[in-house]
Each structure stands twice: as structure tokens, then as C-alpha cells.
Length: 560
Image 1: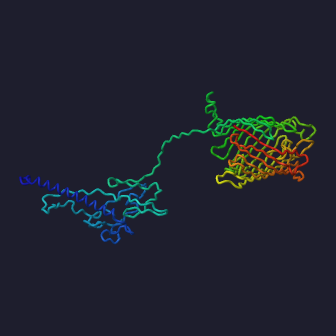
Image 2 (image 1 turned 60 degrees about the vertical axis):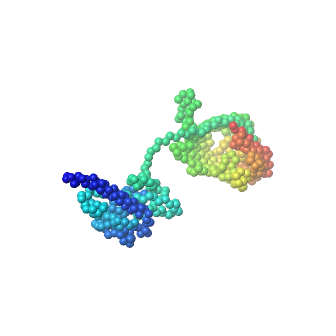
Image 3 (image 1 turned 180 degrees about the vertical axis):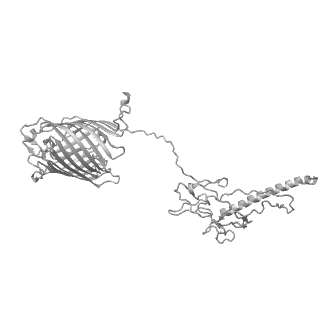
């Protein structure tokens, strides 16, 4: 290097630095102007046309970007991931054609820009000084800029109306994905700094710890009842609605801490000693026999003693029932029951029908029951109905069929706006028949609070030698209108008419047809239990000669 070149070296370094700074500044200004032009323009109805002539046509050798190329951060493509737009601008060469040479005029004007694939005019050629001087050095090679991404700042607009697609910004004027789709892309405020990414949904397993505290499922209650039909009786009930027959205790402490619980079964034990009636029952029910299914299984045992007017009856037995819930209101039940019926202490020993059943009698019963129940309450219903179709086939020492139809319909006449003060009209009917080999203790009987008011218990039916023998056929019915007296519905009044007959043979003898109208009261006291206190007065207008009439009947119960 000669002395002249050494002397001019600082000047050359200063000139080169100015050229590099001005080139970078010009490149940055041009890139900013290009982005501002594209971001600020509106998309024409036919899409972006030829930038050279503005006629809406695509330049020769070029085709618009496909639907899967990204023109907006809202554009959804396969897998929900945004890919960078191909280099070279808005257009790309059509398949099978050569890209044209030359420059494209930007949308906002300015210096021509090269098409994709056009040769770079400055790369590798001498650089011209900014001040117009003669070139005194070979220009350094310029590097091709990194590909930019055709992504625009998301435009936010009011939510569209139903069934209307949102049009998002972008060179292809593509509709935005519906807002309820999980693959809609999230706006990316930093898209100018890095490659934007969409929302790529995936399934993730998240461990959850659920802590549930069981409510009260067991019940122990003491109570009693006084009834014109059953006399005075006490009541002890032990019930568990989350019973598990397989959860045996591991120790003495476990007997009172979680033993026999957790299986979702039902266990009920009832003890009812009384002066006329004693009843002891034990019952276990699996409501979901095969897991979560409509089948249920019930197993139970019972001991029953009843002192009737003409004899004493004792029953000891067990039962197995399988139920099927067809709908929440419709159920089908099949049952097999076996019992030993013992009849003793007869008032007379000259009646053949009574002498025939004295002592122990083995009786087995197969039952099929279809029930449809839509009542709103089992104790004091105000609307809905109950239909029961029952068929029994009895065998053992006595072989006879038995059929029953029980129907009750409750009509809601009127009520207050808050659904209190309900007036209800009720119609009920019972129809039953039995075979010729029916024993005396399985006959139908009528009379009393639960069957035919205005008559004593079992006091409306056939009588032989002063003994109430009942019959093989029954037809009983009732009409009743109930309405509240007090504003809190605690006291209600009923007006009713009971009617029907029980016949020794399957027939209706109108001379024995009974009719008894009357009035009554219902007192609901929540502290005494769910069943209301009932007091009824009935006067028989039609009755048979040997009927045992009774004007007043009642039922009172307490359960705590």
C-alpha cells in the first residue's frame, strides 16, 4: 500500500460507514412503508389484483396464494398452526410457469420492488457513492433479507349477528373461524417480532382430588300410633340407605365406624308391638342389581300376629322380589313368598270354613305386579295417579289364583299462586277376585278407616254363624274432595262418599251394596311425622242386614 492510500484510508472508512448506515436506514424506511401500505388498505371485492396495472388480474405466471396460506393471524389451517407466507410477496409462480422478470410497483407507490425470482440488480456490482463520485472500491456483497411474514395486526370488530361469518383482515379476504371453535387463533401482539403461533388443542390428563362428605343416610326413629282399625301400637325403625352387606367390621371399633356401609343398598328393620297387632319385619334391597341398571333385588322376612274378632292369626315367612324400573313412574315386580299361617283361638268350632284352616297352613305365593305411580306425595297426594295390576298364584296346601286392580286419581282443582292452598278431588276404586279354593284367611274383607268408612273393621261383608268370613270378590270405591281451612295448610277438611261391596262369590248383589257419605278433617303436624292425623265421620245410607256400622273412625301416629 502506497503512502497516498494510507493517507486516504480514514476517509474511505468514514465514507463506507456513511453508506452502510444510509443503506440500512433506507431499507428500514422502505420496509415500514410497505407494511403500512398493506396494513392500511381495504381488500377489493375481487381480492388483490395486479399491482402493476390495478385491473384486478393476476400477473402472468403468478397465482394467488392458496386458501391454506396465511394472510391473517385469524386464518385457521390444518392443525391450527400458522405457517410463514412464501417469500416473494403476495403472488407466487403458478405451477408449470416461469416467474416474470422485472419490478413490481408497491401498492402505496415508491420504488419498484423485484418479483420473486427476479435477479438482484445490485448484488455483486460496483456500489455507487452517495455523493455521485467515482467508485474506488468493490462493493461488499449484500445479503438477501430474511423472509417476512404476511401477518397483520388483528382487527377487532363487534360480534357479528347469528349465522353471519366474520371477515378477517388479510390479502385473501378469508372468513374468520366461528368464535365457538376451539381452533380459532389467538391474536398475537408480538407477531412483528417472532413467528406467530395458533392454538393447537390437545388432550391433557389433569389429576384431580375430589373430596365428598356423605350426608346422613341412617335413621333411627321411635313412634307410636292409635288407629280405630289396629288399636294401639308402638314403632321402632332402624334404616340405612347406604348399606353394604359385604362390609363386615374388622374389629369391635369398626362395628360402629363404617361397618356395613357404603354399598348404596337399603336396610330396614321395623318393630311394631301392639295390643291387637304385632309386626316385625326385616328387609334388604339392592336398587341396582347389575351395577347401574334398572333391576333391583329385595329380600325380607316377617313375623305377624293379629287378634281378629273371631280368631287369632299368626304368620311367619320370607319373600324374594326382583323389580324392573321401566320408566321413573312405571315399574314391574315379580315376587316369591313363602309363609306359615297359623290360625288359633276361634270363637266357635262349628263353622266348617273356620275349622278347615285351624292350625298351621303352608302357603306359597308367586306374584306379578305392574304399577304406574305419578303421585306427588304418598301420604297426602294432591295430583297424579296410582294404578296397580296384581296377579297372584298361590300353591301349597291351597291352590288358587287371585287378581286385583287398584286405581286412584287425584285432580288438582285450584291452588294459590305460591302452590299452596290446594283443592283436590280424588276418585279411587278397588277390584278383586279369588279362586274357589281360597282359604278363609285369604278372603277379601271391607269396613274400617282404610277401606269403607262408616263401618267397623271388617264389618261390611258376608257373615256365617256370626263369624265374619269375607268373600272371593270385592268392589270398593270412594269420591273425596279435600280443601284447606287455614292459610298454612295445617288443617284441611274432606267431604267424601264411600261405596262398594264384598261378596262370597264373584258377583254383585245390589241388596248388599253399601254407601256411606261423610265429613272429616286432616291435621298436618310436621313434628309428629309425615302422615297427617285423620278424623272422619260417616253415616251409612245403604248397608246389609248383618253389617257392623261405626260412625267415627280415626288414625293418629307419631314418629320421631
